[in-house]
Image (cartoon, helix red, strand yellow):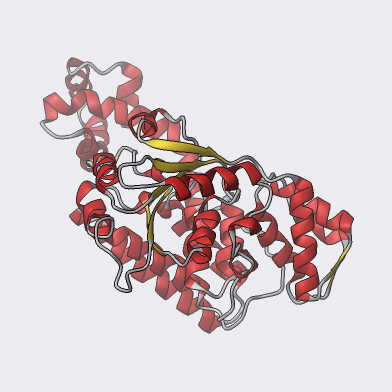
Length: 400
């Protein structure tokens, strides 16, 4: 199995986590002093700074079993209890030590959360094993309740010199020739994100043994969060399910939007008709699962839908393409953006009509706006009916 460099060269020991000396020392001290009833650890900082990697490195170094959930996919109390309830209290099968990792806990405290934060708090208080939480921003108001029960361990951006040194080691290990100036460009572009730097270096090194400085010109400066273009590049270039799913979890886009980005760019990346057909088949299966999530409100399906979508597209190819692809935004989303103001205005108008039509604004917008347009064109008196419901002339004209 081929692993991307971000996983292949993940730290095996806590001392391998670069550029985070204080965080490593504080985390190791917290774990060494932990006992039941002690606070959990909240590792906080930007993406690619080594938070999750440090936890896994500690588990490997001290032969600990690790129980991990991603809070963005576990939104309610029942799911948290099902995944962590017994794991936080029961000894592992081989009676080894254990550590509980709740990744991206800031994703748990969102609008869809149904008691998930409370379930995590209960687990923190009752766990017989050390619990580690990770978040991008520990001071987000959504995490105010949790902060009283944790020890904060801050992670800063990885210094450019540390990134360059690590990239140089990897180039030697992979037999890739690359000048320091190029490595500095890759490090500078990463914005302190070690994982992004590794992904960029691997992309530049694909199918070549020497990286020229001009090759790094295709890299653009990124925001702290991984951009959708980075996620697409990982999904289309990787050959493992884990890497593909990880890619979408680090973006600021939801699965719905990533779906349309993939749908638009499959034919831009893949040339083989069989690979294209296989990738679109994976998207169609994911769409079925996404539909079940919406209709049944069963959020457990969401994780499978994401895995089928990203993994199916990633594994559709026989081998990664060495070419550089300029990914295009979905026309559907561009159209939504152009019409967003009008749709928002129409939603406000439909909201005014809800007590008169005895239906929700969403239903009115979906089922009745076309009918209102026809009635306005055929019966001039219907405009007065809408006016009596509180609509202005400009609002009435929106139906025409």
